[in-house]
Amino acid sequence: MVVGNGFHEIRDQGDEAMVGVLQAYCGAGIVLLFTEETALSIQDQKNTAWNTYHPAFRYVHEKSGQGLRPAMDSGSPRDDDPMPMSWTECARRAGYCLLEAYTRRGRTIYPCPQSSGRNPSTSVVYFFVPETLAETLGLVS
Image (cartoon, rainbow, N blue to C red; front, side, top):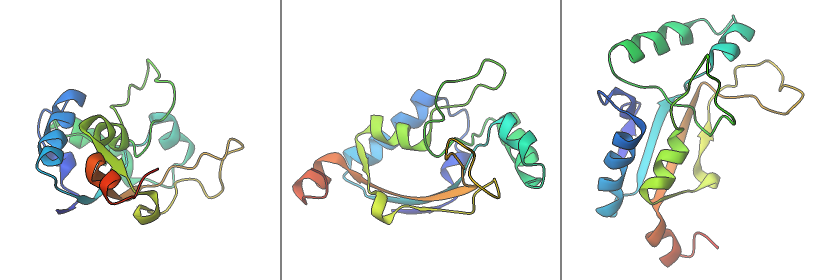
């Protein structure tokens, strides 16, 4: 199934609800290819003011009950800027395996990576295969 920037539009999508949606697809054996905008932390938005559309995009989606999610786990959560579970973690909990070789990240938000090497992208094209199918096909070790 190919979804172009649409999973974030699911209303009232708490972490467990999003895992449930993905579990239903995984249970049906559906391979997921989808693009999603990446939720950026408030600190990342402050540090990269040139990336101006993201603050409004995140705000509007959160107000409407939709949800942007970080691409990958962002590390330890901050009390002043709680982030939802990442798309990768939601899919993993739902029974999917991320095929990194076919996953593509959009442009990064910092002109140069931080000293930690971290440089989130504005969007990601994900390629998820149900874990059992990936094992059967020898895609995971």
